[in-house]
Image (cartoon, rainbow, N blue to C red; front, side, top):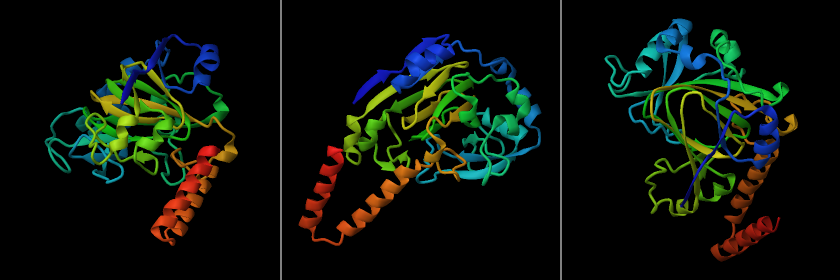
Length: 306
């Protein structure tokens, strides 16, 4: 396994980002950008006051390593001010699962079934405090996701189909990324990897994981991480933290599923291709073992030749 440090750049402007960073299609840390007064204003007291008694839906887990495949967490609802109080504490006097439970808020649209997350609509006062880097055309904007998380929470490895920027407002994060070419070694289940413990993987169960290339960085308040589409990422929250993700459509709109409100559904041609493969596998299973193996290898050969 190879480990590389994510490149960092200071005081990048729109021209430099567009001409020198974006075409490389690799993650970078952007330092010293003007992201507004949020880094000083968004204290627990301020957030509690702004959110008040509005209820929020949160992930709750009694272990820090959250897994979206096995769903080792439950969804619960709390008034925002109580959530902020709990998420910033190590131990809870009142709890759902245990006194050591962990919390994760990923903001949703007003109607979670129809509306995308947009901090400007869900939390307009907070939106006034944060400046989004002007590195993409506003017409390409898809969503801005407000996130608050307990110290120690590790979020599952996954990829997104859109380019995005992770803006760290408070707290320290360790982010591990894998290039799209590592899809062969990450034991995917949909858009998520089955390998939960990426620092100490079970190599008997996941032997190909050693062939991955890890890109790693530590993000401090004020840092912005550019994550290109299809780059797998795993976030370990070293401290209680607040962040905002900005997603935008970088391809023609016809590629995207119009019913996708979270920005994580595969591109329409990709979905169709995967469906064809599923049908091919079902047909191959009708053959005797040696013939199934033979035609499967022919299919792989055709794909590689493309």
